[in-house]
Amino acid sequence: MGGPILTLNAGSSSLKFALYDAGLTATMHGEISGIGIQPRLEVRDPAGRALTQRDWLTGVQPSLDDMLGAVLDFTGERGGRTRIAAVGHRVVQGGADHIHPAAVTTALRTDLERMTKLDPLHMPAALAAMAAIEADRPGLLQVACFDTAFHATQPAIATNFALPRAITATGVRRYGFHGLSYEYIAGRLPCLSPAMAQGRVIAAHLGSGASLCALLACRSIATTTGFTALDGLMMASRCGNIDPGVVLYLAQDGHSIADIEDMLYRRSGLLGVSGISGDVRTLLASADPHAAEAIELFTYRIAIEAGALVSALGGLDGLVFAAGIGEHAPEIRQAVCRRLAWLGVKLDDDANAANAPLISTTDSAIEVRIVPTDEEAMIARHTQAVLMEPTT
Image: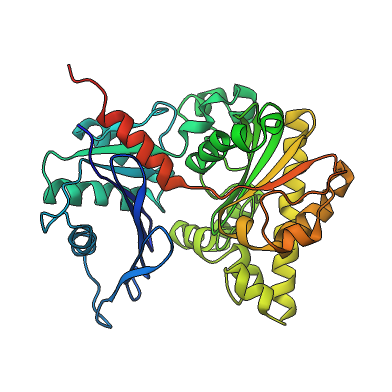
């Protein structure tokens, strides 16, 4: 029953994908970026070499079916060169009930559709991708891999809001996100640092979406994201932690719910504070003081939230940086670690500048590492596990 596995991570403005062989070795990674603006398909081999690139005509907005068709054409699925055994999807919100990867069924899709209001940014795209694959390859196994599942180990005290119990009973609680990334990191730590893996660790997934996770013996006990992916750290274009009264004020001031949603998800964060960009690389290269202000606020918020997670853990043994910013931005890591020096964090500046795996000094009280994350690999593993389950 083994065979190639296609992983899909469908978002509001991009579609990331990867193809894995039966041994779970990646054979290609790709992305369609600029969805809704000017879509571009780029595919690379495992070494990062370009395999293909395609731009759609200016002013032409291809449908999701067309874009997925381009992916299937390139992977060889439509040409008969490859027969994909299953497709694994990243599903950001699984709610309280979906805490394990699951085959996509009509019942599951109906359940996920009901949860779209919990994740208006990602869920519609994920559901559309499932429907498009079903239309193109009826009967092909599709597997939903939930970002929230890894955080199911958190105690109730870490997930409950101080709201009326009747509201909590409807599912309004903290769920946590980036779980596939944290699950991958937790799986790598025992090999990289057995002592850290058994201890108290804060993992920082810092990308366009950003969060922190408190790991105790590689299990999630708290995280900065909550009911939605808006909570916690400021991000590329999302506000992060905000006084709920601000939302009430904006509504009373005449802003519609749709406008507030757009503002908090797409016009805030690094983009909103800088007025320039949500891309850390652009901000670090800018001489505009607003860019520096956005970076400072970003690293300040990371350190503040890390302090809260240290309290939840009862101390700290290790700090892990991951994702695009965490893996490739030495300036951000340095600024965060300086703010955490009170914990005994000491950074090796040369190792940090080189993006080395271990970036703390030998006399640092806290071990600091860079662990490249791989959400697609986790999706492929989960999908293969469901594929290989015995049928009844």
